[in-house]
Image 1 (cartoon, one colour):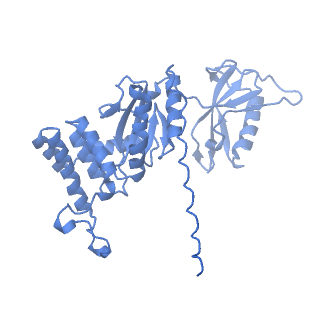
Image 2 (cartoon, helix red, strand yellow):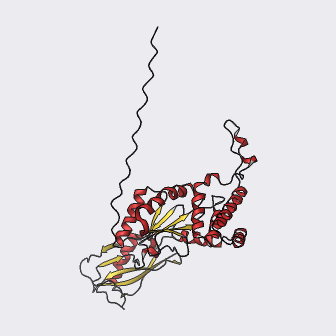
Image 3 (cartoon, one colour):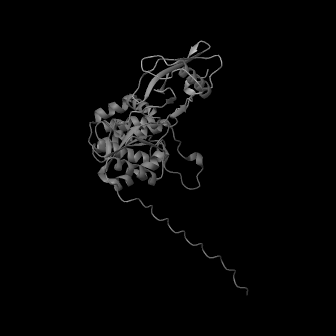
Length: 346
């Protein structure tokens, strides 16, 4: 059935025009609305919400509001035995205007809207004026592209003014993304530097993950060999390769191998699922998804767009951003080779 939520969500104001002689229409907090005002509000709501003819509208007494010159009334309506959720409206003290608006709390620091607590980070310190949180999938080619190009450029342009943090958001359609997320977090617990090295490597070599380990049976096919001779990619191969890469990076970083092995073997996905839950609550449904001081940016967008959002965030913190970014000039196209001239006739 239709509900009052069909009313526009944006602010709207309707002037309730007095027609001829009418009773006193003054609206006073703590008292029921004058009947003339109640009737005009009902006429307005039936028109705006397209209420069924048999519906009943209930308008509560006027209550004090935060808006000067207005009181609040709560409205519900009933149709076929079902009652809508209550909706609040403002009614002016003279009974001539009714309004609806949405109030948002913007008191929180936008940098804290997406938590970066407990995550490995690159770039500036925790106090950096701009925090970028990226929801990442290690099997996502768009994530790999952004990781390889935009983030190094951010660090070069802004230095320690920007802190970059990754949160996990492995997509269900990527068969080894969850395993990769668990493994890199096992390493992150002991070595943030090892975590970033492994993230760099996996993003750069994702197309190779899942093939059989290097060896006589999996050597790259020579030119002209049938495609069927190429080693098949499987999830089992991918999992084994990811585990091996994690252990190798752990050995390089001299972490506790026994603790790392136990974490890899356990494959506890609870922290990853919690990170995905945070992302879903923030309307993340694809990767990469960036939050630049709380402002959401979806997809592998042009670097100019990311720089513009960072510059805005710096200005909001009363920090002058670097000079405006100028994209490099496009490489000149090579001139076509001259057409071959016919051989002179003998």
